[in-house]
Image (cartoon, rainbow, N blue to C red; front, side, top):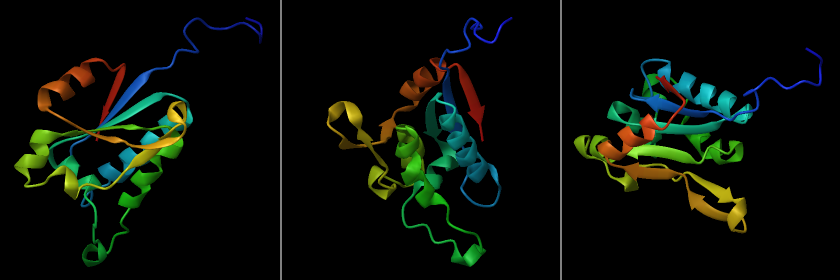
Length: 144
């Protein structure tokens, strides 16, 4: 094969969904998930993130980690729009089961270049059934 030949399917963008089900601290899963999301986005893939079960705690605002001696990495989620990661799905039932509401979550936005750079929310609250449909439409699902 010569250098100018194209491998069929090699330029196809895949849909990746990163599933976050664990609390942000106590394990490395949440931080590793965020790092892998940024890597996937750097390779121009269609990247989405789902938060359910205790994973919803990863994007709760005003996290104070001083008592556990760990750095609070939650502000990094605000940079996702710069990497064109604009679909963050949060399961409504998981929020409710933990006594949380959308008002308890970080404000994560992106600038929509197709709408004169209007700032839009990245977080989408979805019901469990809708999240299952979203998951079914992905090419790759990675769980953390």
